[in-house]
Image (tube, rainbow, N blue to C red; front, side):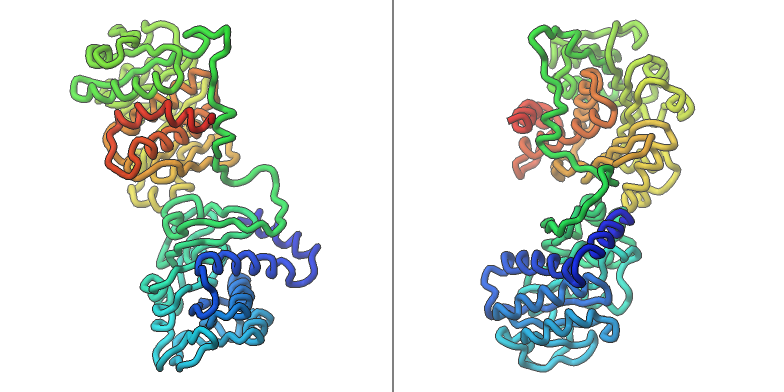
Length: 487
């Protein structure tokens, strides 16, 4: 977030005083008007803190008031509210109250008042609530005096619009340490903040609308979110001279007598993920062949499976530590998932020269870090970076927003193409096979993880289409997702 603050300061130094805030307010007012549909006669309540977000809200409120909305600003710190913004709102016919005071009738064209009552009632009866309490400087949840207003916004009959990001969330990590405002729409300025992309804060942001205010940001961001065009450029496409070996052979060491399905699903993900051939090693060979007869099956262990360009180890493997050790000893890229994460020695992983991609969910990440699962879920960005550094590997932290971090630092990639329907048994096994096939095709661990997550999430959306879905359905939808990206 220091990068954003520095960019804002540099831009403000080149512009006339107040110009940057006016740009932000114009974009905010336009988004609010779009959401309202009919501005004239609407009731708008601004929740105004002492920072620049409060100023943005006041100037945007003044624009809405000039279009006939009844606008009331609720000031949490009247003595520190943005003076010029307050003056602009009053000139436009808006009114101002302090948090906690009684509110009478009136309220301009929209009649934002209506009988004596508290500010919370005013918020609940609004057609639109604008959250300008705190901005990118807020980290530790809302202050006590703001909590009742956030609760009232949650009960409001109208939509809630957050200015830059919902008040109370950590803008840099996506953590929510206390009470925070839940928005239907967040209007953010200049660039997406990490807190708008990473859960749990992402859930508080609602839809996100980016307003360009002219910020010049450095080439290396803190976060990256791949789009279709980025993924299409990275997806491997066979050439005219390609054969099954040149396209990449991926080895799958997975499954057990208890969990043969994990092997089947990992092989499904690998075959649908573009691998030229899949070599399977493990006790579930009969189940794999029954479903995918094109698989090359061996029961002699990874060392004797034949040449591969990458390995996937761990899904449904139980306590088979020998396969994990043999795979990690191979001088090719390796993806470690599920039981393999528990069995992999951290020193062995750190000593590997070939790329390693670890793919834990929150519970597995917590076990690797020696913390409670809740700590990972509440601080996903911190957790994925710490794991990558501890293991000297690339880490794909699965979840509602999947994060991919490299041990060498740099931007963390965030993926949000998934759907809650992907929270089903075996979905992660499909992802392992898919990402493993991309490793075998020559993608870096970071690219294989982030592209795999993107296509897997999109396949989940296409397969589910708003209804329950199984992991085998997700695997079957990978080709459709692939075509969607490339089309």
